[in-house]
Image (cartoon, rainbow, N blue to C red; front, side):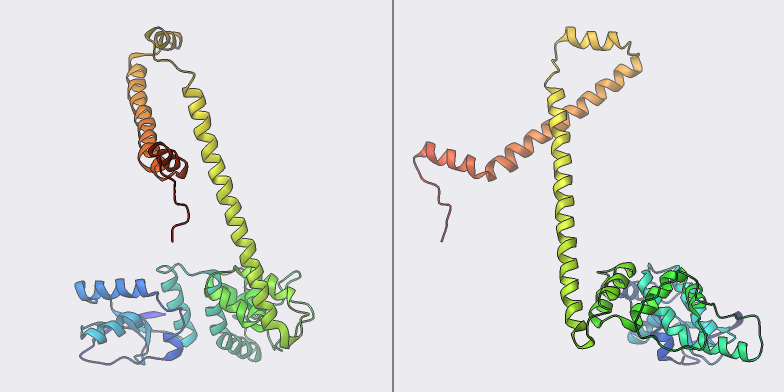
Length: 328
């Protein structure tokens, strides 16, 4: 990759939009696109759109589309690339620093690069080149036993993994999911409802299911996994609430042992030999603690008691009325 130093304005030249470049990365979310649009309208397109020597956009598709939408001028910087594969890898490396891409998203990008990486590997092998060596499958790598696989002249798993910054085993799992997983599992991965490891494990569980039943089995398996996840979250919330309640109980148990008698306070401060600085800190901390307990009292008195049906019932009994617990 080389910056040629050549620049054009949108008034001088029109860029070329190549679908395989425009669709290389996952689309921006609606929120991200709105933020980008607002920034462009307010500040203009201050960063140039990157194009190759054929004027194909390499980086900046969203900015270019929004500029065209609003009639905003933009500049284009011409970069020279060895081939389109190098341009794609450069665009990916540039965007990885700007976006928080999930491992599954990176794996799908790698699969888009797969035909070109395989073609380059074969060409280098045919020419006897040593610069691009296809990786051999390592012992213990991610494979699905007894599943049909696509016949490949070369194994480029290592190169694919390196191209997007994934581990080789993770890339192997992505490949196996892409080749063998039902659509329901892939969609769950796209929605970030599953990790690659979980998607791979579910794909393995479904390998012996007849093909015509595999999609429905995947849906049911995903529903089961979701129920397990929901139950785990509920249990975690129960544990969290229990810990909070325990903390309050302990705090009140200890606070109840204290008395604000001057003699007791002097026993404490003199017995621990508090310095003047420590006494000042203790005054501050005591007032802060008092504010916390006062705030707790306010919450109970103003928020919790009025909403407690037992308190409502007690008030109704005093007034001689019956509570209506089943309103029409």
